[in-house]
Length: 76
Image 1 (tube, rainbow, N blue to C red):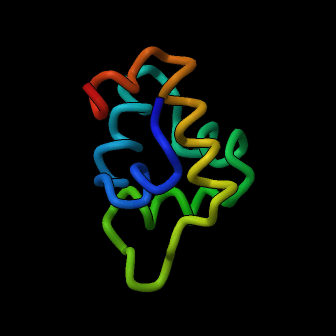
Image 2 (cartoon, rainbow, N blue to C red):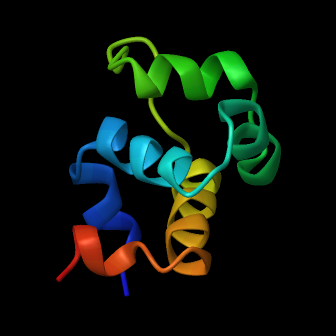
Image 3 (cartoon, rainbow, N blue to C red):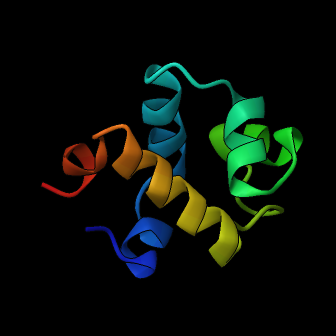
């Protein structure tokens, strides 16, 4: 299981890309994790200087990875 600390240091772009590969849009991801679609877009495009994922977003991404069976890809 991924910890909050692990996902903060992993590649957020790759995380969002993997979730999108499971069929979710950035808007769906944003709604699930409780932030705006532009926020997810910024994270997906590597705009980390201005946008830091909150613990709520990190937890949501972690849950999405788990629900779609993707956590083992990032955390073998």
